[in-house]
Image (cartoon, rainbow, N blue to C red; front, side):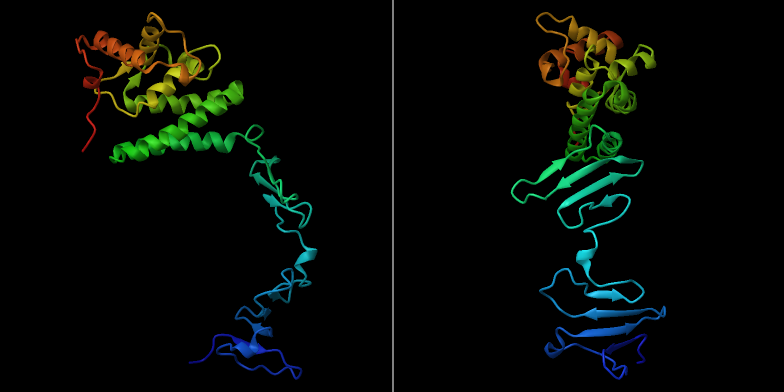
Length: 280
């Protein structure tokens, strides 16, 4: 069988000796290769020591001393200090707000997050998690659906509070869609409801939406979110919640039950009867 390319041991006379296998005697040697694309490379077969000396060199590139080059270099990942342990990672479109990994002090490594200055990737992640949760639910992967929903709800809450005016309008539509999938719709203008879902400081809607989604169940018949919230807030002994931790689960279920009975003219007494049964 002819050889597609000609590896050869470096020799003073320039002759090429084909290499079909390497033995222990050849460890540490440097070998030249002429590739089919007419480029020349050399490979140094050394497994340890001199870690900054290049093992593979393209002869069209200058130098073989990796210590003279930065640890990583590019528009989205860069090591401005060369090999000092400082690495910056940038998201396309947000190059001015890098995630910084600082390992310059081995005993005190630091991660300087850019979640506040570059929230878009995390918001996109939250939206994607809501969508994949729906897919999991539709394919009877209930545990996966609930895990994705929990992660999405946590990101929704975090970034909504981080910058309500900026992040809220991007997150609210995804939350509204997720609620719709579980059977919670609304009777007020959609624009107003989106504004409420984007305002965790002055309305209970973000907290109520999170609590509903974390139930991880689907209603047999739709129930209005605004009516559930009204019923909950008018329950004796509860306060209007501003965090999901402030929502009392027993009162929430009672508010859903009341809203469903009024809307559909029923007299259901057990909350579980409102829910689509869990597939075996």
